[in-house]
Every structure is written in structure tokens, then in C-alpha cells.
Length: 514
Image 1 (cartoon, rainbow, N blue to C red):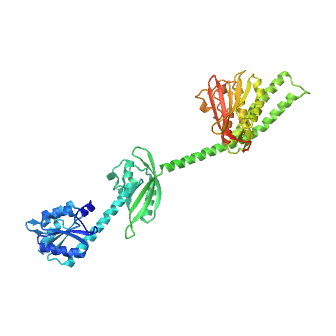
Image 2: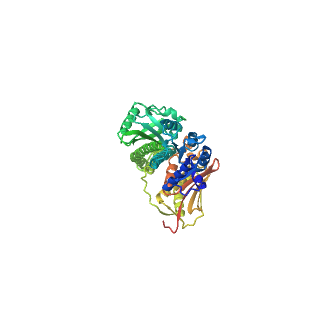
């Protein structure tokens, strides 16, 4: 706005100080103007009465006004409050030919900044002008510094307080006030330990006192404080106490910066919880691993002796004894299956499964797995069918031992949960994403949509535990995790009464190479 006024007034130099001379003596006006303009630091306008002075001031916006007290019928002192009000910061210096101190006192009471006696001494005039311009420049720089400080103080996202050396709040920014739902007058003048939204106990009070003492001695310190938002939520702040020294190096003020560490504390807590969970999971895996090894030794002995009893031709078992030994062997095999599954699961969770990734023939894999499961299927009249949409020379990238374990488990489940005289179909197909999918389709009872999310959970048998179908509830969990370890995917589609389709996908490789 000032720049526009200067341009409209036709100023020759924007950095010159503007002086308005108001005197009813044209000779004094002209001589003053000539002397000031000759100095080269000033742009000067002049007039002889209050009316024209107001008009010129509106166009000119002077830095300094030299005003004669006696302006014909006008009183120059009437112009002083007008200029002060309309143009804040304008320096008003009154001039008078009367050297009586009463005039000087009257000028000061009228809010004049200074006064000069006529005839004017040019040396005194320039000294007076320089003195007031210097003061004006300091005040302007102070205002600018205060504005910059206020912009930073209020523009930050941090909670900021300014305390005196006794810990009394001198200033506080809007961020802190809005977070806690308070007005500035409720905070300013209060010791920081007495703020109503801080959870301050004796320990915290002592810690803050020590932080204040350190700040007054010129040392910075940090302190975590629990506070309360206006909505009742907890807010964790990390207060930094920063000493502010005066020119005498004495600490008069302390800046307290409160940084929101809610997310950091939450992250640290989550990290601790994760570490505890991982430690507990590792302990569980180690326990299962050790127990599985310990159980397998006596189980193998039980199964071995049971098989020897069945095979003993010298002292053959009676029919009742043979049935009893058969039950022992069946129960032992079931328990051994559970132990093996638990051992696999614990190894996977502990990250101790070693994979030998290589190319595996899809068709050969299916044939080998069908041969292993076919006897069990035949005993219940379940037929196997195999249709392959992929060529015999197609390969997938996987660990052959673990891949066979996966497919055998899916086939075993397809037989176990099928109906008598049902069917199991195995087929393979190429997918659009460069993988080969193997589907295992059964004609069993199917699975409800609400139970599908539980399917791969450990020890979850979806109600089959109440039936006469044997199982551990671990096989599918191990299968899913082995598939993921080898970079594949596993899925299921099922409807009650219509059977289920389990499928696995793995990356296809060409020519039997990885």
C-alpha cells in the first residue's frame, strides 16, 4: 500500500525518508525544504495550514512531520493526534518561536515526539531527525522480529510455552491451547507444574523442577510428560526445556517445546508386544520340536514291536490278540502323524525348513502321489481320475519332497472326507500369470462359506472332531505354509453337499530348468 502511494506521488527514490513541513511562513517552508532536499536523504512536501496538511499526508504518508504551533488561525498541535491516528509511526516534531517551557510541555502533552525552537539551528535539526529516524528504524525492526517470532511460535505443530525463570507461563501458542481446550488467560501466569491437564505427581514435579534448574543454568534437557486432550484422550508429550539468555548471559526465559510422541510410544509398545509374541512363539516352537523328538522315539518302538507281533509266525496271535495289536498300531500311526505334523509346523514357524528348489515334472508328480493314496481310496470304493491340460514336459519350480507332501495331504483329505463310493479328480492347467495350477476335486460333503476362513487355522477341524474321521487339524496348516515358503498360492472352493476343490499354484519353468 505504501509502495503504491509512493509511486502515485512520483517519488524519485523509494528508500528516502518522507518529511512533511507545515508552516504558515513560506520563506521558512522553502528554506527548510531546500536544506533537507540538498542533503539527499529526504523527500519533502510542504503546506501552510492544517487542512492542506491532512490532504498532503493522505497522499504522502510522511515518516516525519515538522509542524509549527502557530498556523495563522490554526493550532498546529491539533494536527499531531490526527497524524498519529491516521498514520501510526509518524514522528511529529513541533516548532515554535516561543522559548517558554510551557510550549514545550504543551507539545509533549499533545503527544508530539519532540520540539524545536525557532530560528532553527540546522545542526540541531539534523541531529533530531537522525535520532528519531534511528529510533523509528529500531522500532520497525523490533516489530518485524516480533512478527517473525509470532509467525514461528503460532505456525508450528508443536506445543510451545515461554516460562520465566521460576517456571511461570509467560506465553503459550494456540496449538497447546486448542489441544487442551483452554483460553490463554487460564494458562498464562500459572506455574507449568500446576497446569490442570498435566498428570503431575511428586516425581514429575521434581523432574520438571530439575529441568527448570538446568535451564536457568544454561543447559537443555528433555522430559516425557503425560497430558490430557480436551476430548479426554491421553496425549504423551516430550518437553524440551531450552534456556533463553539475555545480553548479560543471564537466563531470563525458558522455551518449552512439547512434541507429540503418541505414535512413537504406540510404535514402541507394539514393538515390545511383537517381541514378546515372537519370543513366546519361539518358545512354543522349541517346546513342540523337543517334545516331538522325544515322542517319536517311544512311538517308533511301540509301532515296531506291534508290527513284529503281527508278523511272528512261530507264535502267531489269536484273532482277539491280532485285533488288539491292530488297534495299537492304528493308534500309534495316528499319533505319529500328529507328531510329524507338529514337528513340521514347529520347524516352519522357527524358520528352520530347508528347501531344495528345482524343476519338478507336474504329470510325474501327480502319478506318484495317486499311487501312494490309491490303496486307501480303493478300500472305500472311491475312484481316482486324472486329466491334465498341461503337456507331459511341463515343470514347476518347487522342492520335490515338500511338493509331494503337499499334494499327498490334499489327496488324503479328499479321500478321508469323501463319501463311500465317491470320486476324486486331479487335473492340472496353465494360468494366465505364467503358473501351473493343480486341482484336487472331491465329492464329499463340502464346507460352508462361514467356515472357510477357519480352514487353515492350526487344530481347526470344522466340526469333524465330533465324527469318527481321524485327523489332527494341522495338515492343512502345514500345507498352506509350505506352499507360501515355496512362493506358491493355495486356495479352496466349496459348497455344502457338492464337494470341494483345493488347488495349488506354482511358477512354471521351461525345459526342466529352474
